[in-house]
Amino acid sequence: MKRRTLLTTAALATTLAATGLTAYADGHEPLKVGFVYVGPVGDGGWTYEHDQGRLAVEEAFGDKVETVFVESVPEGPDSERVMTQMALDGADLIFTTSFGYMDPTINVAAKFPDVKFEHATGYKTAENVSVYSARFYEGRAVQGHIAGKMTESNVVGYIASVPIPEVIRGINSAYLHAKAVNPDVEFKIVWVFEWFNPAKEADAASVLIEQGADIILQHTDSTAPLAAAEEAGVLGFGQASDMAAYKDTSRIGSIIDNWAPYYVARTQAVMDGTWETVNTWDGMDTGMVKMGEMTDKIPADVQAEAEAMAAAIAAGEYKPFTGPINKQDGSVWLAEGETADDGTLAGMNFFVEGIVGDIPQ
Image 1 (cartoon, rainbow, N blue to C red):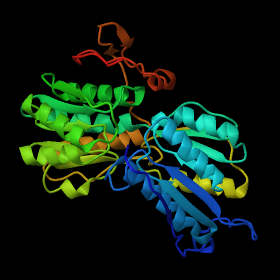
Image 2: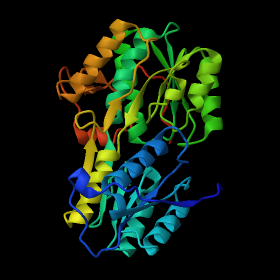
Image 3: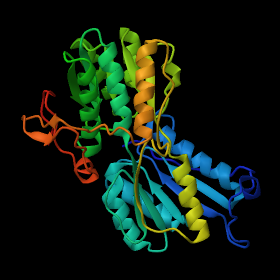
Image 4: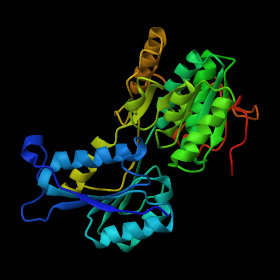
């Protein structure tokens, strides 16, 4: 088991008057906001961006808040113990930032009805539990378009973490948009069954490269796939953050998960006494999903197409899952012009036609 550490950071001196935000009532102790992370804050991806959101809370509220976090918390019983201790230590608001924290969050929330909980990427709510996620598949559509246009081997590698709808949606979205611009494209998928494991992620990238992939996509949390791509002389995309350390070598673009505005708004709601249970699923329209910098390795015309697609998605003019689309077995899923509803997307448990391989059970 990885060693877990609890780190309390000093609040920044920024005052709420400077931000235009309502101050927490005089006489109160600082609002204590906790964050539970599945990886280390230095992962360069998923957890890094959540921690940027935590820092944004500090910057916005100054000495009106105290933030704490625990990093590298395994999903399961360990996370329940961490959440319980955080609540016992006086946290008023706790963000739990991985899918596998869902049931532990619900369990702990039932024991601490006065504490507000926010769970990322799950679907179970309670009177004091909200859920929030981002439409990552919108960014995957843009990446798929770029990959389909740029691959020379016609093989795109995809490193998948765990077989939940969020990950399956991303694979389907990327594949559909690669296939739309390159009928000969093939996706190779390797599952690592973890969110953060640099060694496994690097091995997966190497396997995909050996199978002919010249572009790597990932739905895992570390920069290890980009390091492997750099060593092999192939290209890849950053995941969850810009992963700009590789922009001069393997990284040609990225999806950025922008949690900061949500974290600031939900912290403000607790301060104001207006917090209520919500189910938030935002995307490019609100800026929760953003496309990172594209490098000049992407041809100018492909960049322009990608930017136009992202703008159309953000404006609501284009939905990545628009028919005609068949399921993997050839049955019709979406007819011509039909778009997928959120309920189907939220529970997606099938591959689309053309993807080879089974979804692990």
